[in-house]
Each structure stands twice: as C-alpha cells, then as structure tokens.
Length: 639
Image (cartoon, rainbow, N blue to C red; front, side, top):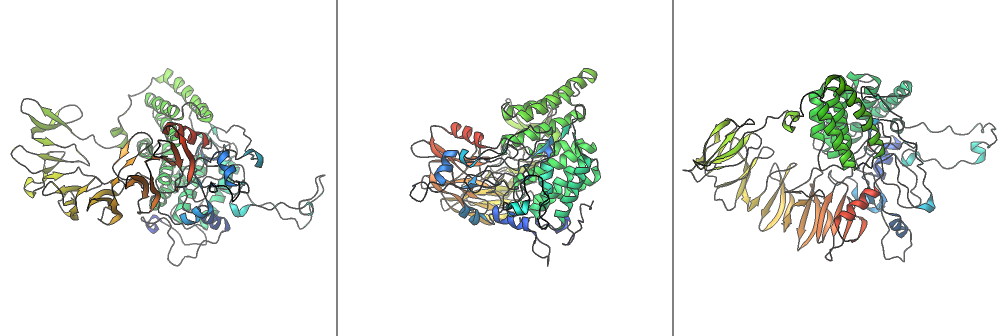
C-alpha cells in the first residue's frame, strides 16, 4: 500500500506541503489535467458538491443529507411548456435539487454554497431494502444514501456522489459509466447460451461503491466494525489506491484517502490508516469546506481510537460535532464518540453520547437504534463487572483547552475580578468593568480610567489604558475591534496592539469563520482578516438566523449569511456572491436548505443554490422542517 505522503501513479507525488490552503482544487505545476472519465463526469454533473461514500458505520450509502422535491413538484417539472411553474430542479450532491442550468452556473462556486459532505460510518449490516425506482411512482428515496433521488424522469439512474459524495451502494456508477441496454446478440440469450464472442465484459465495480456496499459487522464486545470478507476489502483498498494514482484535486484526494483509511483500519493496518487519515484532513482543510473537513476529522478520530490514542480522538469528535450540521450526521458523531468513551471505561459519558444520538434522530433511525442497542448491552455488561468509571468531563476537558477565569463581582467593593473553575480568586477585584475572557484575553477598565486595557489570564496588562480605546470588542480569531472615540472609526488590532485593519467603520462585529460584519456609510457588508472587503457594504442588515433558533453575527461555518435590502432578505456567501436574491420577508439557514417566509406569513424552502424546493404554503416553519426531514434519504454516512 502506498505511503500516505507519496502516492504512486502517473501524477507526481503529493504531500501536505503541496496543498494550497486557500483553494479548492490544486494541481502540481506542470501536471496534466485529469484524464479519467469518471472524474470528468463528476466535475460536469455536480461541480463543487460535497458528498462522501458510505463506509464507516456499517450503514451503506449516504453521501449527503439532502431532500428531494415531493412527487407533486416533480410532476410539475415535466408538465410542459404551458405550465406556469418552472421546471423543478434535479437533485445534486448537496441533497437539494438544482436545475441543469443552475448546476452549470454553480460550477466553481466558492465553498459555502455546496451541499453536505457526508459519508456513512461503518457499523452493522444494513437492512434489506428495495432501492428500485419506478417511473410511474415518482422518485424513490434511496435508503442507502443521504442524497436526493432523481426528481425527473430520465434522471432515475443512480450515480456515485460527485466530488466527495458517497458511492452508490446499489452498484451504479458515475454518470459516464451508465451502460446502454445491450441487444440479445450482445448479451446472449436467456436460456443460458454462451454470449457472443465480441460481447463487452461488464464494467469493473467502482471501489467506492464496493466499500459503501460492504455489510459491516459490529463486534458486540469491542464495538469495532469487522469486514465479513477481508480479501474483498483488500481488493477495494487496492482499487482506491489506483484511483488516487490519477487524482490531483484536493476534494477527491481528501475523500479517497479517508476512505482508504477506513479500509486499512478495518483490516488492522492501523499505521497506514493513520497516515492516510491525517493526510486526508490536510486536503480537506485546503478545500475550506466545512462538512468535508468534519468527515475527514471524524475518520481520523476513528483511526486514533483504534490505536488507543483516545485523547486526540475525543478532541476531534468534539471539534467536528457542530450544531450547524444535519442532525443525522451529528447523531453519528455522538455515536462514535460514545464508542471511544466506552473503550476508555468512561461508561457514563458513553451513555450520554448514545442518548444524544438517539435524541437527535427522535428514535426514527432503525439502524442507529440497533447499533446503540448493541452498544448499551456492552456497556451494561462492562459496568456490572467494573462500574461506570469516572464522571463525565466538561467540554473544556475534552477539547484540551483550559477553562478561562470567570468574571465575579464583589458587592462590598463594587468591583470586578476573576475566579478560576474552583471559585478561587486569581485576579483581584479591582475593575469597574470587566469583559469575559476570549482566546485567553479580556478587556478591563479600572475605576480611575475612562479607557480600556487588555489583560491575560494572569492579570498582566498587554495593552495599557493610555492607548486611548474608549470602546472595545472581545478578541476573536486573533483580532479585536477598537474605537478611540467610542462612537465609530473602528479598527482591528492584535494582542500586541498592532493595527491590522485601519479605522473607517461605523460599527463592527467579532470575526467568525474568517469574516466580520462591518457597517460603513450606513450599509452592512463583511471584511476578512486582512481587511479586504468581501461583501460590499450595501445591505441594511447582516445577521444569520439558524433553524435551531440561534442567530449568529455574521457567517455560518458553511460561509453563508442572511442579508437585508429594502426590507427584503436574501443570502450571500463568503465570496460575496448572492445565493438568494433579497426577496423574502424572512430567511432562516437550515443545514441543507433555506427556510423562507412570504409577506403573508407562509413558509416554504429553497435549496442551497436558491432554487425552489418547497412551495411557501405552510403556516409555520416547523412544518417546512418536518417536510424536509421526510424528503431526506433515510441513510447514514460511513465513518
């Protein structure tokens, strides 16, 4: 098996140093363009999508968590030119439907508007399910994939998840792999006669599809996956290596390396698994795509877990599990984090993870329920012998970050100080005002001063009050917004008081995911960490409501923000491109869609490319979320 940092093949060897962190696709200087037919088809069918083959948790299929339009909308799509309703989009790797023209326009779109980068986790064998789709019955939901079934006739052929999509467990390949029906002369007769001598052999099975179709077995004592046929898994791994030899783009390499890590892990080749998984994370991070990086880190965490490196595995699972992910992917991450806790004898903590996984899926995921039942039986047996182990850890302990001092107020002195996690005072009560610690830094103001000073967790001053900052914003991503007059002309400084973004903004919010919302000349936009304006300051508002009820000041991890213009709301991405034209009374960012409301208060949904998904006919957004959940393919990604 090829070393992780130097894969053999027609292209030059790739190492982490060769990966450009700011771009999605990177080729070596002088390297020829990809020539493989299936990779070209991926680029054509679903450019910049984020899907993964299923292969980690025992569930098959599941590249992404995306809904397919209802049958009624699909019927509208083929009703003819006289219909007022535009043709409905066909599904893409993000799980949201998109028209062919929209797909073409989407090619090359910056990360943040793509779909889910989900792949299955290896686990128990999937249940037998009929995956066939009949033209007359409307689109079926592919239960082996977290992606949408085709929305129009003529698109019913299944396809491998493009650009980091999960392979089709049903055995179908890329769009360019589809075979025309053969004539009886080509295929032979049905009575067992030998086929004609010139009949073409069947196309080889794609290794990603084969990996997704493996019926994993979960050991009831170790809670580790087992391959029913190790020899077949070695062949699959060899096939993944062959695909890597002709692949240069970061997306595909991240996917293939992490899948090869899965295969090596199950085969017991843990050093190879770890090397591939770490390199996969490097490539995934270079794409800047949130879900792709989440999956790569989760697969790395599993490789570390099997090696016994539990502290790093726990940290990776915790970092990966974001509330901005779809619930089914979060549930899988909790399940695997629970298995890691089980390995360590942290049985109470393991049970909390399993409980959270079940809660996220509301008990409606039969395969998850079955796996958790196996895990809880193992917990019960082990607890009866050894007890439930140490108490659950706080998030700070799992992440390996020290808990910062907490501001406390002394009623007698009417002053603020800071206490540690045990309640012991570490910084005396001496401040008239004290902000919370962020990134190990806090702004404080003494009673005799009108300006703010910056201190670290020991109380030492890094920026003195005599620098003249009347208004300050807590540090985020290494920078803090400060104002000399307390009214405007905001600028960004680092902890050494070096100005990184010059003054000039009337209002500024903390950086989030590399961007900060700013107001200039009455309009809101966004700047990056260098001060470059990436979203023009032309909007009347910039703030992003999420489907779970939270609102973020700025951009989501996917690089999306809700903006308002003339009382109407839309969506822009981190590159400043308008994804949803401001035309709605309300827009809420859902993990796989946009929930939108009309002036009449009726709710519907758009896909991640701004195309109609659910008509705005529902009285509340909860009904729209429920419909999206019903449209999602019932499957899980593979870790």
